[in-house]
Length: 119
Image (cartoon, rainbow, N blue to C red; front, side):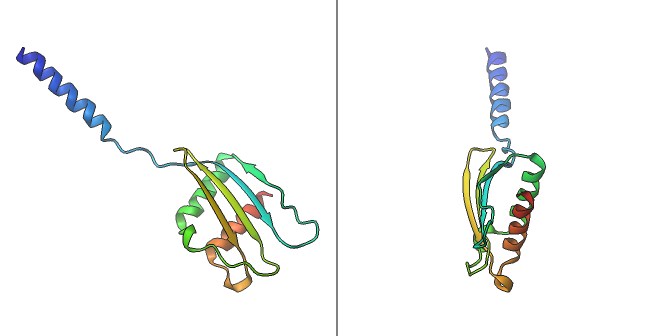
């Protein structure tokens, strides 16, 4: 009986130890994006990005900055970028940024350029 209890105790510790493992960080699985600028014939179509290399580049940019703190301010001639992000853990985020000349935060400039390079 003591041997059975010892085996059960060891199995419990092993099982619980497995539960304590941290989950891997979420990764981007999809980014739906649009850009808009008040210019004739500007392509403002919605596009879906699933290329792992491009998503990794976008995720690196998002991790480098605090996107919530730097959305930018709209102004005439600026570019609006809208991103719907889907993560591997099932969460979704919406991010919208605006460029406005020299007043544009560095994150917004880099994000705008990255998304424009995909279009």
